[in-house]
Each structure stands twice: as C-alpha cells, then as structure tokens.
Image 1 (cartoon, rainbow, N blue to C red):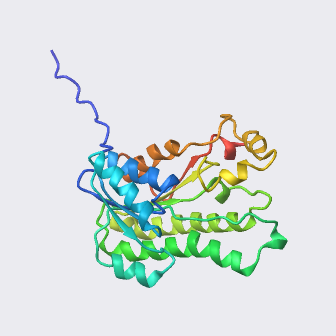
Image 2: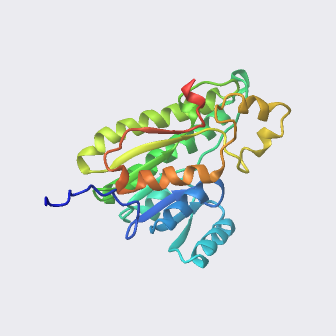
Length: 254
C-alpha cells in the first residue's frame, strides 16, 4: 500500500499576535474593518477624531473579548500622526478615513479640492510613510479605495480623482516595498449603506439609478468588506500585492 498523499493546507486567515491600525474607525466601514481584524485575532488600534465615538467602539470590542485601544487623532495632521505613531510597530494598516463632496465639476471649489485630497490621498500617503519603517516582513497595507477609482460618474470628478490617486499610490508602494515583504493592496467597494452615504440615497431616483448599475442587484453592506479586509491582511493573501479587490457587485465588470 502506498503512502497517503500529502495534501496542501490552506494558509491561515488568523491574525493572532499582530497589531492592526484602522483609520476612520469609529463607525461605518472603518469600524467594520476593525471588527473583522479583531475577530481574526489581531490587536486593533482604532483611529478617528471623535474620542467619544471611539470609546464606544473600543468598549464594544473589549466587551466582546477582543484586544482594542483608541487613538483620537486627525489623520490630516501629519506632525501629530508622526508623533503618535513613529517607531510603533504596526503589522496591518487600513487607510480607511475618507470623505466626498459630490458636485458638478464647475462647482468644485479650491476648498473642496483641498479637503477631499487631504484626507483621501495625502493623509493615507503620509500615514503609510510613518508606519512603514517599523512594519515587519509580512506586513499588509490596505487602502480603502472605491469603484470610482476605476470608473467615472457625474458629480464625482473630485472623488474619482482622489481614488484614482489611491490606486496609483497602491501599485507603486507595492512595487517599492515588495523586497521588504510588505504587501500593499486596495479594496474598491461600490455604494455601501453607511451614515456617509445615507443622504445620497434620500435623493429621488438615486437608489434606483445605483441599483441599475449593479448586476447583483443590491447595495453593499458594511459586512461585505469585512471578509476582504481580513483576507488581505492574512497569510492567505501572501502573494497578493499591488492589486485592487473589487467589492462592487459587478459594477466595473460592465
């Protein structure tokens, strides 16, 4: 009788012993990402500007048996970011903090441009720059991008520009950091039902127009990004870098 075949084993999706930092983590996609990473075993640092909201989120995670702490910080304040995080080991970074000011191209002001680019692009870039020196091999940077980094839409020229920049930054950092064993990827959701998107869906016809573009026929829920976040952070994604993971119900496949 021959020896039993040695079968391959799926790499672990567990994140025990790793520290994850998530920005914009007091609600919405950021809180969902923090929960996903915590449930996979990571110690999570939740970053946002609102200390009270962060305290509630961290208390909930701790009550559920997870390791979590808060860091009240404005990620657009690069000096404060460097002071708070420089030299601190971070295994997983989720650049989730973001904003949007949807307007016709002719109505975008310089203040709009600065606000969107500052948080969506500049803050993400310099936060990554801050944590990279102490990030070990096997580290994972996940940039929360958007399907709008790959397609265009009316009244979204500024948002599309910012997310296209995130996509370029993701690919270039992946190439540069590959030799150090650090992976850099983006997640590109479609419209997710969150407090930030709720006002859009209150506009007449907006929900119907969005659903008509999604082959799966539904809006995203925050749970839809939790699996992708945990996967890209884990050893199961060890050969994935410089990629954009579409979580868009098929929007960009058309």
